[in-house]
Amino acid sequence: MIARPPLVVPVAALVAFLALMTLVAADWGPLNRLDVTASEDLRGYGTDHPRQIDALRVATDVGATIPFVAVGVVATVGLLLRRHRREAYLCAWVTVLIPALWGLMHWAVHRPRPPNGFVFVDSNGFPSGHTSHAASAALVAVLLLWPHLARRGRALVVAGAAALALFVGATRVLLLAHWPTDVVGGWLLALTVVPLTAHVITARGAHYGRE
Image: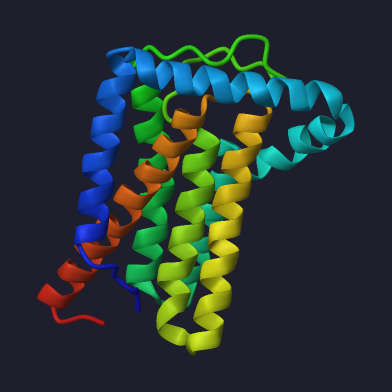
């Protein structure tokens, strides 16, 4: 079984994502100034705490593409072997769609990353791929586990999922790998794609009368 958030959630996230992407692509001054101010404040913090930055360079890779795809493939195969087909399809589609979509937007939207960051990445920055991965994996876990848990278990899973998504997003900003709005874009991308994919898969299953 797959839980489905109300359709208004991914629709609202999509509208917010498109609005943010439009402002980023237009190089809107007020948004840029907010990003620069926040990042420069964090630059000072990072310069004063080099050991924490070293630890974050390692920790941030929990949201990298290779771990995300590897976990997605393992989860998909495991669910297929247990004959949980719709759950496997959700994992498979999210594993493909999220890297493809943020990669496409990196190609289409010219958004340089913060200069002289604590990590070097030679590509455009909107939206944050690490953040998209972490938030998507967290959302998939919530949607798959939600129907099988009692209230306390659901609260723990949601808290853990939110912590993962927030942590990875925070590392990208602290490392000056992304502007804050790149991270917000990653969260919104995940909040759009994962629930919409769940709606499509469960609707198709209901149409054919399969659980």
